[in-house]
Length: 638
Ligand code: K7E
Ligand code: CUA
Image 1 (cartoon, helix red, strand yellow):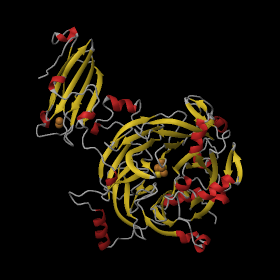
Image 2 (image 1 turned 180 degrees about the vertical axis):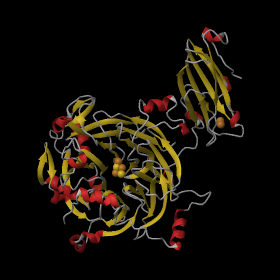
Image 3 (image 1 turned 90 degrees about the horizontal axis):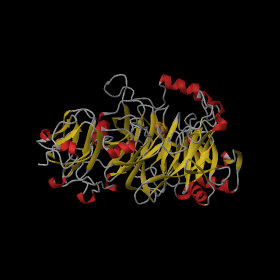
Image 4 (image 1 turned 180 degrees about the horizontal axis):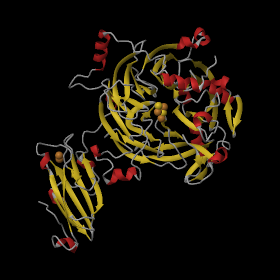
């Protein structure tokens, strides 16, 4: 089968909105009622699953319920979010560093034995080369690692190994390394490099650190995934731009019929580093795959592939063709055999290229623009089709002889998605034991299916029931910008805390009783320790003077779930929000005199409006006498 189509044909198809799945037939009234019931979560009832979906360049992660598709919560990660006070207190400001945005693409739930263990959610930042860890005990960001050294464009990420040993990442861009070195892009092939990074995860705390890296040619690595079962210890990435073009990539990086995918033996990489076979660059052990055989292999896949998804058995690795109307299925047992028998069709910069025919099981003609593939654990694969704008269900191998002869027979069903599907997620697909049942298609456009909100239309997501032979589109909702991948977790597989217990608060400035609270001065350092309780601050007055360095720590002493207090300071760009039992702190230099009210920003009781106080910033030499003496408490510790 001639499995490639021209770029122009694709451009034309997109321009004309041509789409084999685009037909919108009316749904019968009875079906509509049945679908509505399937996604209906009645008042007082709860969803069965969490959907954690990436917020793309909004820098955040959003939580929705399934099957309702209702947006439940926003987890701020790479951008400040006044709603939870994220990015205003010292701790979260420190995590954000100099950046106020990120580009979140691929969330990954932590796993134990290839099963979600409900502990952490990791997400990558394509823009500033970072990985963040969200703790599922409080659904908050606890660590941002990066910018990762020697890594530019952390897009092929964050792929987690089956026991959360590593987050594995590959670079979308290549630059002269180490960072800061400058070379002419005309010397791209010679001077630029990409990188695969192994980010080590502490099994107890989830704390991440950069483990090692593998130097790669300057291909643009794309999506990937990690092995399990027979492919345990391995990881896979597609690439585009094996042409190594550095300009007009739209044309120059789409010349070859096949690009090279990376097959990485991460256990071998770990071992090579332990054996001292790496050299250091910018503080990280770097493996040169030409000098350390067995760590990296290439395999050709057509054409400008995008997704690369390992099935739940760990035996099949599926690449989406993007510019080829087929998905390519690799057989990992054949990959192993080809490696062992050295069935290579050549090498590139010392890295063996496995012979395509020796490792491929088949090319399944799914349609136009296949991107990402998910699995239900029952032998079925589901591929998102960007150009056809639909989800295609097809059968994984083993195939019958008739199917092998004509793989169109392996294509089982297709359902339209509206519009231009990017990622899709089937519940638990990346584990060895998918929940199945639900699929969510995350669409790049919504083509007028929502009420008009101006020139920019919201993205859409659609819920598809994949429990039967035929897929059923059940419901759709708008989605915060801009969803890429998502993870689905059964609600009963995670136990978030209801409060922060007083006994676990280790903040040295935490105060739990009036007697501990108050304002102290040491030279020009003023520290205010406030208690917040329905519905007042104690103290509710802070006196200081221009030139002082002010630290305010507010402890919410409530131990009742959802009893939250805020601390908004007028004209100082401060809004902290404290959950029950939590202490948050900010530092500011006082540089203007005046009386600045502070108030509770989070509705907490009938007297929430009364929860307020004053920061009095005196001019030097004015105010209460103890201000300039540098001793004792100032302000009202009533
Ligand atoms: Cu396909 Cu960043 Cu996963 Cu978006 S990438 S669609
Ligand atoms: Cu405390 Cu509103």
